[in-house]
Length: 152
Image (tube, rainbow, N blue to C red; front, side, top):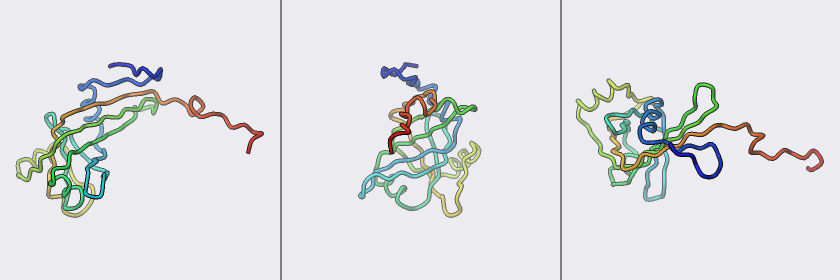
Protein backbone atom coordinates (compact mmCIF):
# COMPACT_ATOMS: atom_id res chain seq x y z
CA UNK A 1 0.00 0.00 0.00
CA UNK A 2 1.16 3.49 -0.80
CA UNK A 3 0.15 6.72 0.87
CA UNK A 4 -1.33 9.48 -1.21
CA UNK A 5 1.06 12.42 -1.52
CA UNK A 6 -1.55 15.06 -0.68
CA UNK A 7 -0.92 14.68 3.05
CA UNK A 8 -4.22 12.92 3.65
CA UNK A 9 -4.50 9.50 5.16
CA UNK A 10 -5.50 7.92 1.85
CA UNK A 11 -3.80 4.67 0.98
CA UNK A 12 -3.62 3.18 -2.50
CA UNK A 13 -4.63 -0.48 -2.28
CA UNK A 14 -2.72 -3.27 -3.94
CA UNK A 15 -4.64 -5.68 -6.16
CA UNK A 16 -4.84 -8.34 -3.43
CA UNK A 17 -6.51 -5.87 -1.04
CA UNK A 18 -8.86 -4.69 -3.78
CA UNK A 19 -10.15 -8.24 -4.28
CA UNK A 20 -10.44 -8.72 -0.52
CA UNK A 21 -12.72 -5.69 -0.32
CA UNK A 22 -14.70 -6.72 -3.41
CA UNK A 23 -15.37 -10.07 -1.72
CA UNK A 24 -16.58 -8.27 1.43
CA UNK A 25 -19.37 -6.44 -0.40
CA UNK A 26 -22.09 -7.45 -2.81
CA UNK A 27 -23.46 -4.16 -4.15
CA UNK A 28 -21.81 -1.81 -6.59
CA UNK A 29 -22.45 0.45 -9.52
CA UNK A 30 -21.87 -0.47 -13.15
CA UNK A 31 -21.10 2.38 -15.54
CA UNK A 32 -21.46 1.98 -19.30
CA UNK A 33 -21.57 4.32 -22.26
CA UNK A 34 -24.69 4.51 -24.41
CA UNK A 35 -25.56 6.60 -27.46
CA UNK A 36 -26.94 9.18 -25.04
CA UNK A 37 -23.80 9.27 -22.86
CA UNK A 38 -22.73 7.59 -19.64
CA UNK A 39 -25.21 5.60 -17.57
CA UNK A 40 -24.76 4.16 -14.07
CA UNK A 41 -26.73 1.22 -12.66
CA UNK A 42 -26.76 -0.42 -9.23
CA UNK A 43 -25.83 -4.10 -9.41
CA UNK A 44 -25.41 -6.90 -6.94
CA UNK A 45 -22.35 -8.92 -7.87
CA UNK A 46 -19.97 -11.67 -6.82
CA UNK A 47 -16.26 -12.00 -7.55
CA UNK A 48 -15.54 -15.23 -9.42
CA UNK A 49 -12.03 -16.50 -10.21
CA UNK A 50 -10.51 -13.11 -11.00
CA UNK A 51 -13.66 -11.76 -12.65
CA UNK A 52 -16.83 -10.11 -11.38
CA UNK A 53 -20.27 -11.42 -12.35
CA UNK A 54 -23.78 -10.01 -12.13
CA UNK A 55 -27.16 -10.78 -13.63
CA UNK A 56 -29.22 -8.42 -15.73
CA UNK A 57 -32.27 -8.32 -17.93
CA UNK A 58 -33.06 -6.65 -21.23
CA UNK A 59 -32.61 -2.90 -21.36
CA UNK A 60 -30.14 -0.04 -21.60
CA UNK A 61 -27.34 -1.72 -19.64
CA UNK A 62 -27.46 -4.98 -21.59
CA UNK A 63 -27.80 -3.16 -24.93
CA UNK A 64 -24.70 -1.06 -24.16
CA UNK A 65 -22.71 -4.12 -23.13
CA UNK A 66 -23.76 -6.15 -26.16
CA UNK A 67 -22.83 -3.14 -28.29
CA UNK A 68 -19.25 -3.32 -27.02
CA UNK A 69 -19.31 -0.63 -24.36
CA UNK A 70 -16.49 -0.96 -21.85
CA UNK A 71 -17.60 -1.23 -18.25
CA UNK A 72 -16.49 0.24 -14.98
CA UNK A 73 -17.71 -1.36 -11.77
CA UNK A 74 -17.29 0.46 -8.45
CA UNK A 75 -17.89 -0.88 -4.97
CA UNK A 76 -17.46 0.97 -1.68
CA UNK A 77 -17.72 0.14 1.98
CA UNK A 78 -16.91 0.99 5.57
CA UNK A 79 -15.25 -0.88 8.38
CA UNK A 80 -17.39 -2.09 11.29
CA UNK A 81 -16.92 1.13 13.25
CA UNK A 82 -17.56 3.50 10.34
CA UNK A 83 -14.13 5.08 10.72
CA UNK A 84 -12.40 3.77 7.59
CA UNK A 85 -13.85 3.80 4.07
CA UNK A 86 -12.70 1.99 0.97
CA UNK A 87 -13.48 2.21 -2.73
CA UNK A 88 -12.52 -0.24 -5.48
CA UNK A 89 -12.85 0.28 -9.23
CA UNK A 90 -12.80 -2.53 -11.78
CA UNK A 91 -12.40 -1.53 -15.42
CA UNK A 92 -12.78 -4.20 -18.03
CA UNK A 93 -14.46 -5.95 -20.87
CA UNK A 94 -17.57 -8.06 -20.63
CA UNK A 95 -18.90 -11.29 -21.93
CA UNK A 96 -22.50 -12.34 -21.58
CA UNK A 97 -22.76 -16.01 -20.72
CA UNK A 98 -26.00 -17.93 -20.81
CA UNK A 99 -25.00 -21.50 -19.98
CA UNK A 100 -26.87 -23.27 -17.20
CA UNK A 101 -23.53 -24.31 -15.70
CA UNK A 102 -22.46 -20.66 -15.37
CA UNK A 103 -25.81 -19.69 -13.83
CA UNK A 104 -25.54 -22.56 -11.35
CA UNK A 105 -21.98 -21.56 -10.37
CA UNK A 106 -23.16 -17.95 -9.89
CA UNK A 107 -26.07 -19.10 -7.73
CA UNK A 108 -23.75 -21.32 -5.70
CA UNK A 109 -21.53 -18.26 -5.16
CA UNK A 110 -24.53 -16.39 -3.72
CA UNK A 111 -25.63 -14.35 -6.73
CA UNK A 112 -29.36 -13.91 -7.11
CA UNK A 113 -31.45 -11.07 -8.56
CA UNK A 114 -32.95 -8.62 -6.08
CA UNK A 115 -35.75 -7.38 -8.31
CA UNK A 116 -38.54 -9.36 -9.85
CA UNK A 117 -38.54 -9.75 -13.58
CA UNK A 118 -36.32 -11.36 -16.12
CA UNK A 119 -32.61 -11.39 -15.24
CA UNK A 120 -31.70 -14.01 -17.81
CA UNK A 121 -28.25 -12.69 -18.72
CA UNK A 122 -25.13 -13.36 -16.70
CA UNK A 123 -22.48 -10.71 -17.28
CA UNK A 124 -18.84 -11.52 -16.59
CA UNK A 125 -16.47 -8.58 -16.22
CA UNK A 126 -12.88 -9.50 -17.05
CA UNK A 127 -10.69 -6.79 -15.51
CA UNK A 128 -8.14 -4.82 -17.47
CA UNK A 129 -7.47 -2.71 -14.37
CA UNK A 130 -8.33 -3.02 -10.68
CA UNK A 131 -7.58 -0.06 -8.40
CA UNK A 132 -8.65 1.02 -4.97
CA UNK A 133 -8.09 3.26 -2.03
CA UNK A 134 -8.77 3.29 1.67
CA UNK A 135 -8.94 6.30 3.95
CA UNK A 136 -9.79 7.41 7.46
CA UNK A 137 -13.11 9.20 7.77
CA UNK A 138 -12.43 12.48 9.52
CA UNK A 139 -15.02 14.40 11.51
CA UNK A 140 -16.63 17.24 9.57
CA UNK A 141 -14.86 19.73 11.84
CA UNK A 142 -11.58 18.71 10.16
CA UNK A 143 -12.66 19.67 6.66
CA UNK A 144 -15.68 21.98 6.95
CA UNK A 145 -14.96 25.58 7.95
CA UNK A 146 -16.80 26.60 11.12
CA UNK A 147 -19.74 28.93 10.67
CA UNK A 148 -19.16 32.45 11.91
CA UNK A 149 -22.15 33.37 14.10
CA UNK A 150 -21.79 37.02 13.02
CA UNK A 151 -22.25 36.30 9.32
CA UNK A 152 -25.54 35.42 7.63
